[in-house]
Image 1 (cartoon, each protein chain N blue to C red):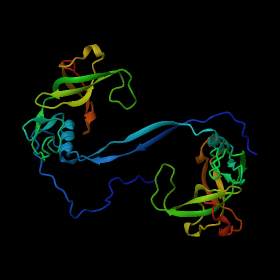
Image 2: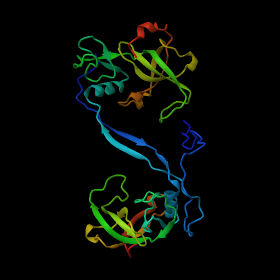
Image 3: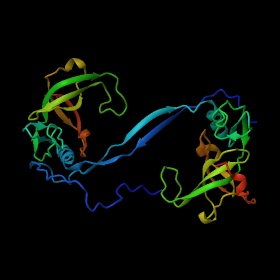
Image 4: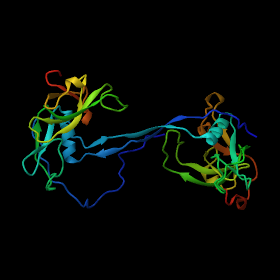
Length: 192
Length: 152
């Protein structure tokens, strides 16, 4: 991806609203350009522990599988599993395999990409409802012109090569269209 | 059913990093330019005292300050504490002092590190001198460290 342009002009101020007097600097310095900007990166370094239910999700991803947690009352499957049903607030009753194919529930066209794995812009970022799940996952849709992407479209995940599989959601490189009839968007209501 | 019997619990590094770029303004910019040029600049306060590192506005009156002056590259430790356990990202990757240093010609102190080897070599009132970085680029780290005067 092209480097993000830190020097781009965001807005031109016609009247800055403040001013600073001229500074007198004693002679004797070098003849280089004066420093006007500095890079001051800040980082917070954590050891992240996803917990038991997301760990199961990530371990399944290493085998190119998607799993979700089952609500003990409604039977709805939530992905990624969090160990607790977000609807009834009780521990999920188990973990089931879902997908990996899915359906577009909503999407947008991305014109400003960021992150090391962002594809060239413009591209489509979508919410994708894995078969058997009650909620959607984020994904990128490629291998189709962006103007042809639509809600209800059927997709399959494209995985990284087997020797690159890790316990990461990035095992799914992107999603691509399946040659299957669209799902009626009315059936996707409440599943974003 | 997926295999839910695993007892393995995953853990991974998670780094949240912001690549901030900030403008320095004319005063801090001149201070950093000075460091790149191998000299230290302070600024004359409303009461005539020399503030170093320089500030844009007088600490007492708030008046905009404009008269920058060159101060020394040696000075006196006015306060210090010893860092035994060094953390990633600190200026020195070995035990060192964090100190307030009043440079010759300045009336205020700046915080920096003193590469003194052991805490026994540290004392309030000791004289220290700048050890410049091998390559200076206009950052506070152009001062690699202060060292006991005469040892640089």
